[in-house]
Image (cartoon, rainbow, N blue to C red):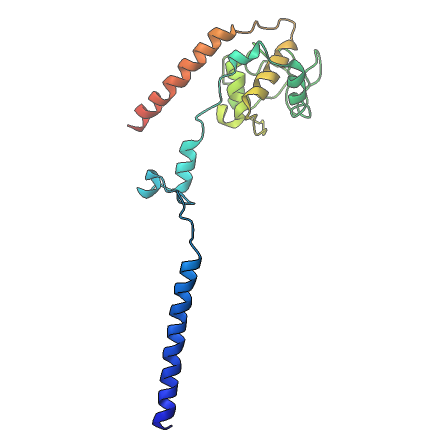
Length: 207
């Protein structure tokens, strides 16, 4: 290969490099990408400190069910009956009705835990103690297995407070002696006080 050919090759390479640089400059002048105001995947202080994404997500979840006492007096019973259809395959709710996979629920509101003598409850339910008040039902229907570990009930729970309020109000009507609903204003004040106290308790636990 003579000197002339080598010079031509070197000149071609230089021209190609210069062409790439020129095209890049022209492209940069024609296109102005918009800067994002915030990163697409924001990093919290917890993640930067080494906490796992699952732990950060879990901390954002509510600690428990929303209070429903203030909703009961105005709850739509027809909506409660509709919500109960999710439970009807396992529970009958008519007076003197049969037990199914789960016990008959007539008169459940205000009744003792494991109140049906002709139904085989789990040990955890049978030994729980206490009564099915409005708040106990709210807790149980939110996440049954979290509220009573070992319950036979496999239902995943009702996450909407309005659904829980409606079905509890409707179940209360399926009774010889329905319980009176709490005063909505007093119940709202109680719920606000409990919600205000919850963060303080969480902070004390973390410390």
